[in-house]
Length: 350
Image (cartoon, rainbow, N blue to C red; front, side):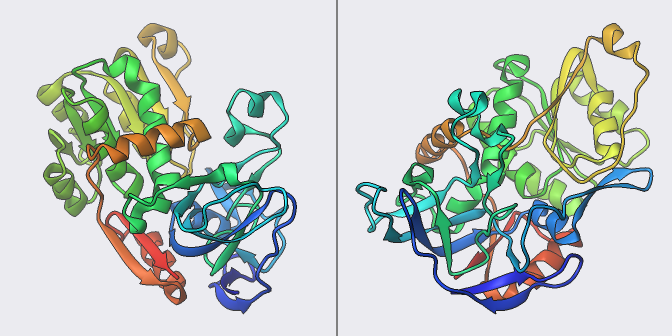
């Protein structure tokens, strides 16, 4: 098989060859047709997450080089292990990449994506910037034969991250909002579309420092948009929509989180789904005085993935812009994502 491989941290990917995996036991092999490019790929390529104040979280351990990035995978099954059962090789599948041990308490209640034994495709196990990928069990294959193949794989990360975060704020948003979505990259734009379907009567607010992304958000159904870098952005939100019961931060930076929490109503919630990096602090008495909650959200469960795809099938979720590029353009896709040039999602085609 052909791969775009990470041969060292902080360096461009290189094309490498490898043997096509042979499935054992319950395993299957997927011949990849599409793989989305995610901001998490940049952190792994760099080998660290930014913790702010010059500190870094090293993520170079537990990964053999050369390594294949890519976790937003879709394709068809090309080989089936002897214990995998009946697998329809004529269907197109998206691959749920957030696998755990399958045995611990978290896995048993369906939170396999939170398992401490990480088996995440493209994160610590070879992923989808390749022609083939090994999947340990067919339960991780979700039929997407009736879904746009260019977006099907991206629903397993950007879509699932958006959907799961939105479910966490549903009690606060109620039926009429308002809800603030901060960060209008691929995940934020996906969240805007899911929010329109999940909260049809809500006032949807969106914030981004990029004027083009704000304009596209308005065209995509946002009620109001804001530039959080403006000195009076908080006042603009209050004047336009009042204090906000819920906000989702799809950036995960000090500035984005400060903005998101600053516009909360008393008893409000910020869900943090972004991983850009940095540090955040707030006087402790403000938490009980404002009765606010800061909550993390990491992708979503396999059950949520299936629930999300059912919502997509209803036609209520408008597709975000997709830029498809050949697999050998993986480096340029990562570079454009790093430079903030990507609108929607870049998806590599194999």
